[in-house]
Image (cartoon, rainbow, N blue to C red):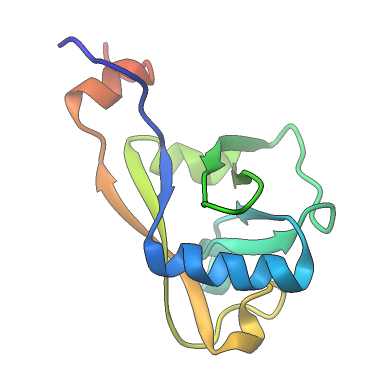
Length: 130
């Protein structure tokens, strides 16, 4: 299958982008990390840049482009990525109490991941076909 352009592994909804603008005004540039595990460990955690240090055990999924903001890097632990590598992820926001360390916690909203399987062109683009 022929593909035109490039594909992204991760995107953001308009609602999440709006909250990210508010949070950036309060905290400065932001980034996301999803570690995996139980409880809130499987939720995307949003941190001010520099407050969470990534390592060689993390996969850079991509960059969220939100109008008016610096690019927002999104990472996932390598072990968690093994479960999610065939999916496209969308960061969204819903009412609720998020994890205590994620900056949206006090807002009464929480970030979450919505996913879908990658299509054939995306699988080829990301080198996930035989």
